[in-house]
Image (cartoon, rainbow, N blue to C red):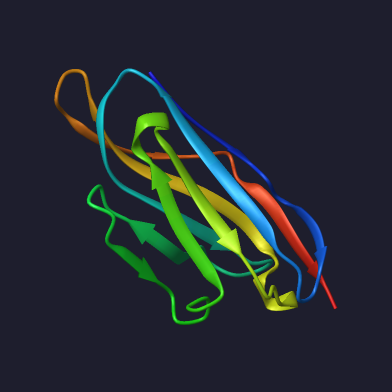
Length: 120
């Protein structure tokens, strides 16, 4: 059994910053890709950023140069530092991880989601 627990969402004014964290726990052999997705009100879930085990990152164009994804492999944790936040960044943010189980099978897991609201 694997759990992803997110923290760090909240309400912030435009131009402000927030840091999201997502910690994976349970029966984990290793973790491949980790990432953040978001679902704005009334819209579909979209990619925000991903980071592979070696550290290579990928960002949505809308967040490049404002958001930074990082991971601490020793803690099985992925972070999302969000700066210069805009009202259009308002969404529920979800953590995702591709986890290799103790049985050496890969599964995709999702966190429960954390609300980020940016006021204008």
